[in-house]
Amino acid sequence: MAVALLVTGCSASKIPEDAEVTISGRLTRADGAPAAGVSVMLYKEPDLGEVAGGVLATVTSLGLLCLARAVELCKGARKVTTDSAGTYTFRLTGRDTQGTFNTASTMGISARLSGGTALGPAVQARFKVQQAVVAVPTLAFWEPADLVARADRAKVSVKWSGRPAQEVQKSLRYSVTATSDNDANDVVWVAEDMRPGGALDARAIGDLRGYLRVTATAEAEGSGTKFTTLHDSQSVRLVGVLGPPQSRGTGCAVAGREGEPEPLVPCSLTDGEYGPSFRQQPCQDTEASGAPPSPQPTRSAKACRSNTFVQIDLGARRPVSAVFAHGLSVSSRTVIETSDDGTSWSRRADVRQSRFLEAVLSSGVDARYVRLSEDGGYVISELAELAVWS
Image 1 (cartoon, rainbow, N blue to C red):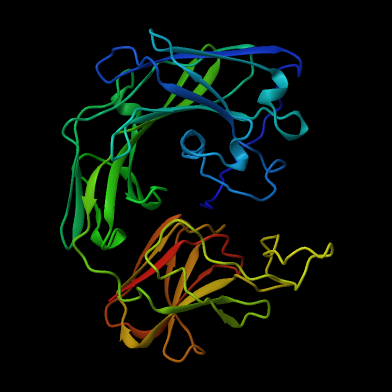
Image 2: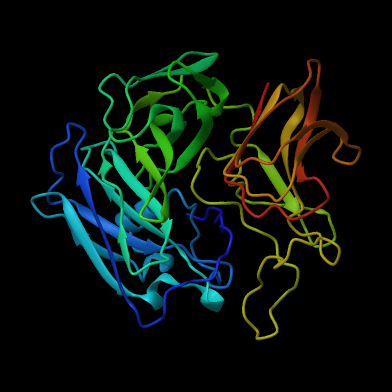
């Protein structure tokens, strides 16, 4: 699974490399009882100087990813088990909390309860270590008993009540995440700034057979350390009632080095799989070392135009009402264009940067080809699925 890494701002570390650092805290269940015997992961988020290929993850999922599977970025993570009181302690050195050029890395704590066939509730905390002893605020698992997700042909309604223990209601931000029901629990859609009783467009999940969870995010400060805490609810079943988008199973192409469309065969952008990103096109036949070709290494598209757009071929001229992009990684606004012949293009939408993008077109648009690009001609770093709806 390749997804975008969000790198936070850098600040110099105040901890000597050889200093002894202690990070401790406590987990509780939703009813306040100690969460005993639960695995807790401590991990360091990589900075730009430490990322050199491999599997990347969003900062809100890296710790949970490390709990679930072994990936390259998790190799330095530590795991302990809470005691009978729900407490945990990690001991490390100052160097373990630092990134490139002696910067203070963002550290993370994550834990999850078993949820049977669906994912159970999870908690996370993110912070920077600037003192030798860090006391993480008590993290309470959140299991709203009345969490319900209902889909119809227009929308997906999400209802819940209550909030995570220890968190102040006014400081909470809520988001909703829809995932597949495969072993990887691929993220299909994330809707930010949600409220109980809110809804998302039914086309965001289409014909999904999966799960939905709510995440409550809060900011806190204790003993001179700022914490971002995230509480994932348990997952509940979610079944989309729409059929697949009209683009399902159609052909697609990605920009080659000269800007010409290079067919992707098979087309991973229309296969209904939300995990892997599309196969990027190289800017050269081989690396100087003789290694296999790699995608364009920089954002600039002046020297090479590979991966500056992707496009869908619907096979014939059809009505196009909306475009949904799943797992999109770009650095600026996104442009949607349509064409009847694949040569002359009409600009239909200009949408702000978003990893899960919804572009509703004006009525009366018919086209055979639909193209997504980044404003300014920069590279599309990642895109898992591109759905075109009639």
